[in-house]
Amino acid sequence: MKDVLGRRVIAAVIDAVLILVLLVVVAKTLGNEGTTSRSIWAETQGSPRTVFFLLTFAYFVVTELVWAQTLGKRVMNLRVVAIDGGKPGAGPMLLRNVMRVVDWLPGLYIVGAIAVFMTGERRQRLGDLAAKTHVEAITNDTAAPPRDEPPPAASDDDVLASILR
Image (cartoon, rainbow, N blue to C red):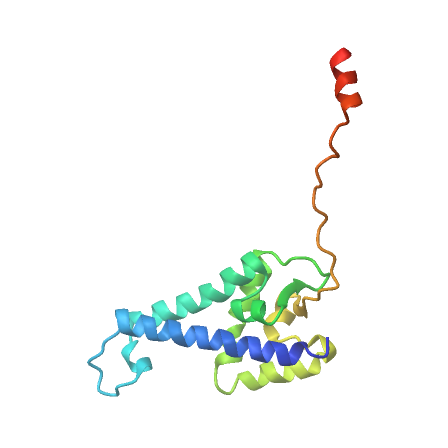
């Protein structure tokens, strides 16, 4: 569990790059390129910015709901689990991601950082605390589910016996 915090940071950077690409796509397809400040963020004023925020929120909620991990977490072999080790449902995943607002807003993100360091080895952010989830490393020690092996081929005697019955 000790390396989970570092892996979470790298996963967050990967997700941030994906979100930045999303911002550029929204700005260039829906935004106003005539803004005088000449920044991608300025191009998304109004409804394009709303679309960007909704798509960003959907990215986190949907990927974590379907796979229990964002693409960044997948690359870093991390996943979101309920405190009891099970797969969190839609409610906890939604709550977990609504709380990202605290992590993103200037001045409030320090509250999230304090929570991460105050929760010991679990390193839970406020969204994890509210949703009763945490992020764990996926290890290769976990046995893969057994495959259904085909039954052994019937011998000639078995085939003959089944015909004569």
